[in-house]
Length: 432
Length: 168
Picture 1 (cartoon, rainbow over the protein chains, first blue to last red):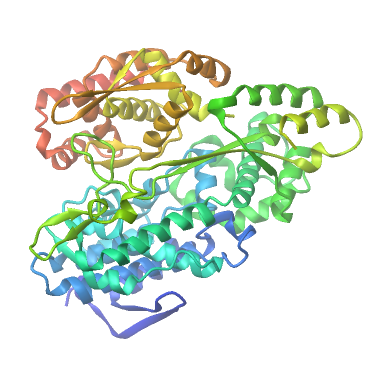
Picture 2: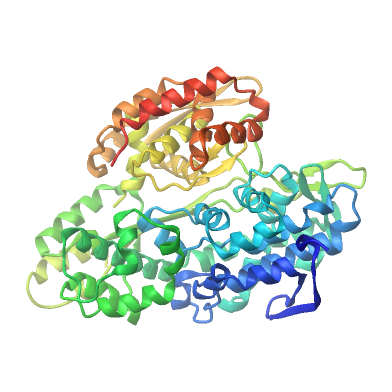
């Protein structure tokens, strides 16, 4: 028996709060879970700074990755296996890509990526293709197998059904994170009937489609996603924590370039500060290290670094106001000027943050934009795009929503002492 | 503050006018690959590297009145033209930082066809591969476009030329 088809002597399971059990029969999957790169995901939180708002949200990328694997496994083993449109020789590449799709996330994922202008997907591929334990396991399947898994994650894999399973508008990734994040944050949105969706998924040519009888379950899923984005993922207070996290790292980087002498050498960060990151250094950096250094930095001489890291650790977050740059971008210039006069560093204590989302999109012929839509499979075999059949989805299709905020340390602006009048003036401009 | 928005407005400002959403996407991608400060995330899409974040940002900048978008009916598809408004010009002047060779790059890129930029950006997307592997990869994922050997040759020469403007 080849390594690719080798099964464990008996099925292993991981107890999981969302799927009850994650089932593993394939030796390859079991070996991948045991690699140091996959185990590292235990030390990367799935929702970054969200735990500072929803205290239950301490779950990791490790549990999410197992969840995506489990959903994919159920689709290919329980639903697709009997359909001639599905090539079951793609099963293992689909399972491995599902399991490994988030491998390259850095600590506090998005904030970290933003500061150092990184792309976690590029690092996922680098880990799969590089000198790593994951690569070693994948190469045991076949020499070209790591490249195949990487191509699925890159979305350039020839079989687009496999890509759609892992990454599309209704994929295993989203189905897991919506339910998992809802469970751990404790919110009531985010729930939908995944069992129903799995039962009505069908492989068709180069995509996955949904039997039209499952349309209402898909509507529920789309609305769950919409709610989760604005109620949880873009929560203004967790964005405040993310702003402080970003600014702390930026400050440390600035000091490093100025030749500042840190009390504890920021060794794990140096390659990031220099913009010259080796893969092994990337893999070694996780949230435990970030938090340790934040503790160190609270004792630094530099008042800004010390204050920001302390704010993050002790949850003394910035306040915010809504802001419309289109109507009043000059307000920021006015504030920056006032900050300067008041002796405050606007780079770190006056922060604009924006976010936007597109809950569902449809493809427009001849245009680049537009995601691959969700297609419903009618009883006569024809396909119809979801928003053309569902008024609920049609109402939010292609509609983008934007949000801008300015974050600032209200506690500092309310302090008595020197330049109190200037601080008061700043608060007035901020309408506080 | 607002630099990320202002940087996108500046691209259109430096170009004078950008015709086509695909072209704008590829111009920003190539500039980003040359280390200019763009934070929009790109993925490989049906027309090569594509950023949904950039699409959203451009729509937002139009809503804010910093860019104008004109739509032209071309029969089977819509063509979009982007220009900067006076308000957009003031906005970029207020928030953009100096960016070395960016004006030359934008000017150079904007004179190229969208098809050629699609080829260049696709090659750049796979720039961790060897030149031969890049060609095979692009021929695989862009089979329908039938890029010729001459086009590949031209693209590599063009990329070498662009590298002299790399932002270090």
